Length: 354
Image (cartoon, rainbow, N blue to C red; front, side, top):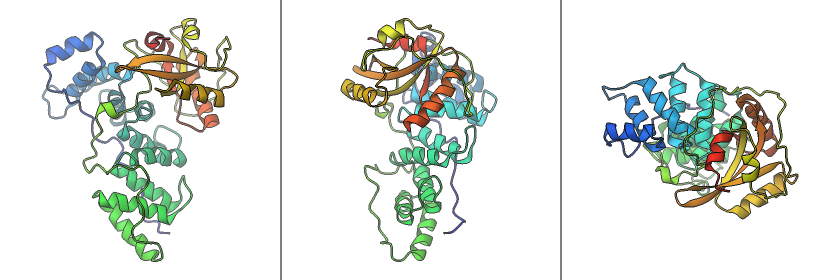
């Protein structure tokens, strides 16, 4: 297998701008100062715009952070870009990965790609090509061309996945059809070296068309992991390395499927917990708890978002962000799923309706 094939890692990518960026700055500022996450995001992007004479990266970070801490995926993604580029803050790839992860877990494709790229090279996170492949695949299935190509590279070279020339050709072909030129040359080389493999492979299942522009889908298409209004999660910077720490479990055990609201009420608002998943189907959440937490160590709470009721599974009670982060890394290994999201208890207490 050729060794000239290389990952195409354009970490950072384009900002995800808001459709409401023509709003009056005075109105945006008033709404943002009142706690409106969308207004804070739009205001932050105004300050971040390279074409705007009022560009101010420090102010951009300030407002993006406010929106990101309220759970807005586009703000989380763009704050990750600011940390990755060292704009308005010292460059910190660990913080960048944390913010990308929060947006990625809400379904934002470009954040999924950027997080995969950081895992692929070990920038701010331990190098982990298996996780890189997982995040690339999620982004590829949403049509991010770089992710489609890089997934082909991983299958081509057997990095993070079992080597599979036919599958690599599938992804290369899909990227080439989307106008991603490096994929076309790799596809031609593989076809020449493997004439027995059909020249046209079936498209990967459920894959939407590749976006040649790399634009993000509208915010309404993202799948939220939480909806908290206001409250700021503490300033402690989480560690990006695997760590060991004693963790505190919920003091009171409950029957599987019990709502987290009574348990949440007794927690210290300054503490942290781990959010594992969110779903609009309460029965699915209950089944998840029965399968993974039959001892009752995880709970769930309900919250409202855009007229729908969501149910989020939470686990643990930790006195610091770093303790919660370490526990989340250990838990992710056991569950073989996405990295748990560290949440400030105060935010969840405010969002929970039961």
